[in-house]
Length: 113
Length: 114
Image (cartoon, rainbow over all chains, first blue to last red; front, side, top):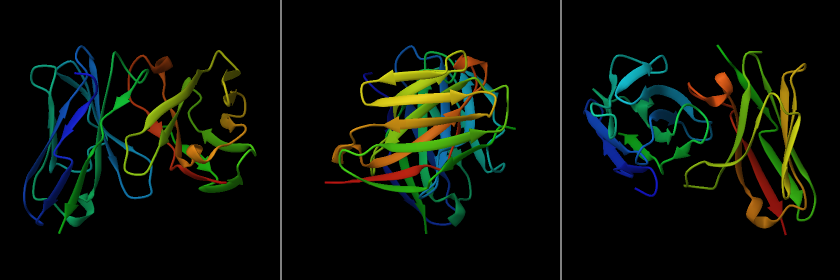
């Protein structure tokens, strides 16, 4: 596609509910990154894929967070048993390789009530 | 791990004035430094970047300078316009940006008053 597409744009979840956030990267982009952006803060790294391999998941805040990219294209970030502190914008970015040439998606704003 | 600090957190200038935003980084292995602009409710967009083998880079009204010894880099915007109003983020990465993730600063909210 022409850009990085994320869905849904907005998600309201009740505390304890599971959610799944989708990222469709730019076609051919090898690298895919997930970031969490709290209100008024910079994006914080969650996890990084190169093709289907998850090379770094050191930023995932707890074992309730899980990401996958099974075919090296679309990625899903899953949050189990959501908590209020999970409320944030979740940004996906893709690049031809590594940190150079990032293109961000518009993000998914998650609100946990 | 890498830590990026950014200041000021807010900056207000008159249209036509210059704006300077400064960042410091902790890991001397970092060698790729991009700057992003994020308008309210929109995605961050890359505006300029620099690698550590270069001390300065310019693109029209925007310039970035890098001091590797002091581990700091700065964004300079000249002749500011109201449409420059946004949140600006600096970031750092290792491996020249060829792999790995970015570490972001907390952002600077720039307001340009007409």
